[in-house]
Each structure stands twice: as C-alpha cells, then as structure tokens.
Image (tube, rainbow, N blue to C red; front, side, top):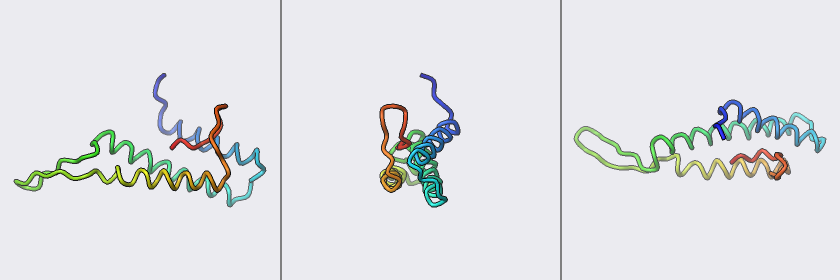
Length: 106
C-alpha cells in the first residue's frame, strides 16, 4: 500500500473526528476546539516520529574534539504527546472502531 501524504492523513483524521462529533450531536465550538487541540498534538507526534526515524533514539554529538552520545528527546516526549491525545479522545468520547471510524491515529 503506498504511503499517503502527511497532509492527506491529517485531513482524514480531522474530518473523521468532526464526523464522529456530528453523529453524536456535539456541535458546539468547545468540542471543535478540542479537535483542533488534538490536531496540534497530532502534528507534534508526527514531528517526533520523524525525528526518531531520521536520527534514531541515540544521537552522536561532536563538540570540538569530544564525541559523546545522548538520548533523542523525541523518545521521551512521544509517549507524553500520545497520552495527551488519548486524553482528548476520552473527553470527546471517541473510540476507534474497525469500520474506518475513530481518529486516534496515535
């Protein structure tokens, strides 16, 4: 299966979340604002995953003649962001399902 562009996946997740809210008649600005918060976390999650994929979990740092290794901070931050995303979905009472619904692309 070909990889779908990030912007396309983002739009699909956002649209799916909004559709689920509409089905539940949760159409006030408060709920839509929570979706936008979720999408901000989704963007951060994607950036963190890209950092881990490109740089790895351990970074090699060269400082002058010194060479040392340090943990990629993205490894620590990713679970925190995923937890916040799950918290938002819980607040929205949205769960993933096998029928293509759900927006918890965490």
